[in-house]
Length: 197
Ligand SMILES: O=P(O)(O)OP(=O)(O)OP(=O)(O)OC[C@H]1O[C@@H](n2cnc3c(O)ncnc32)[C@H](O)[C@@H]1O
Ligand SMILES: [Mg+2]
Image 1 (cartoon, rainbow, N blue to C red):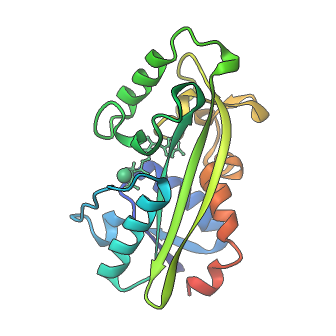
Image 2 (cartoon, rainbow, N blue to C red):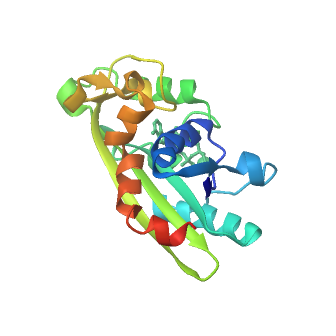
């Protein structure tokens, strides 16, 4: 199978990518496979900047085309927080603590003011390629408590009105059909066969 290298160490993201790329005929390879000891500091102030940083760093090391994903949750009532700090909002990659912090900050905020969106910037970098990015979003509402056990990160508190379920109540395929990550990948779809051979 053809391979696509993703500059991520997030197992939940890797699963999302598998649901999206396997049907297109690509096997997903992550940093756990190709650079387990590499740490890439996310010093950017936007999702795009961080995605470019991750993609270019790994592409330079491997000499191959690499895709990176920088993503997160932007809550309107919190002026876009946690945003680029989504992974480390309450602690380093502690999904549970991050959810608790969001729910505490939104305590007493009525449903109509709990609007939010997931954002995903994907960057593609590699030899003989001018790095470029695409961006995808997914609109939702922050629940008062967790619902569902699928997915990762903030999925259990992210309600998708169109499906009347939380993101964590969707299968990986259902999530991919409507998610920020799926929407970003669909923007790349036409170019993928030329980029990933
Ligand atoms: O940088 P990599 O290694 O890819 O993994 P990461 O988890 O650090 O990823 P980010 O820096 O892009 O931070 C994204 C965070 O946003 C949240 N997030 C992103 N996409 C999500 C999704 O589809 N569902 C739930 N939470 C998501 C989750 O908390 C992630 O840890
Ligand atoms: Mg990260």
